[in-house]
Image 1 (cartoon, rainbow, N blue to C red):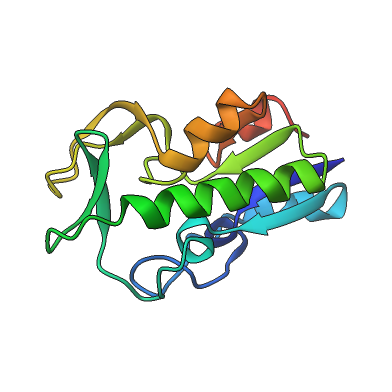
Image 2 (cartoon, rainbow, N blue to C red):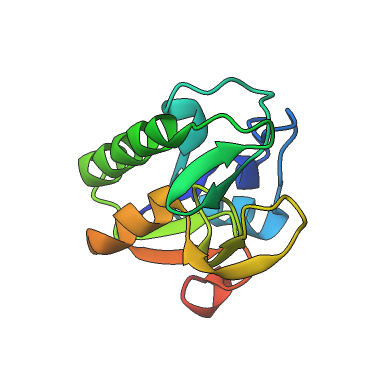
Length: 143
């Protein structure tokens, strides 16, 4: 089975700050599954490192107030293409991210407050029938 996975969870340095969110338990899945790494923000043309972004009023805005919504949409569409090309039915995405968060994302004030909502990529994948999990809950469905 192919599983789409946020690149940062696999130890790839693609986070806004140039680092990663390595999650050994997610990376360990590569023993039994074919993991397809994606970083929608990079796929959308944003550099690493980059100014952090959050979703605010259905737009993605950087901390220095630039609208990067088009980059996030472009990356989400490319992630969906990759998921479809690889017949991925499941994605393990980084929680709370403006791209990959599902159910909760940061509120757009850059104050670490979480609100209900989905990141741009997670929402698109979900609307196209892909099961969205994160680094905190994937083990409930994948072993």
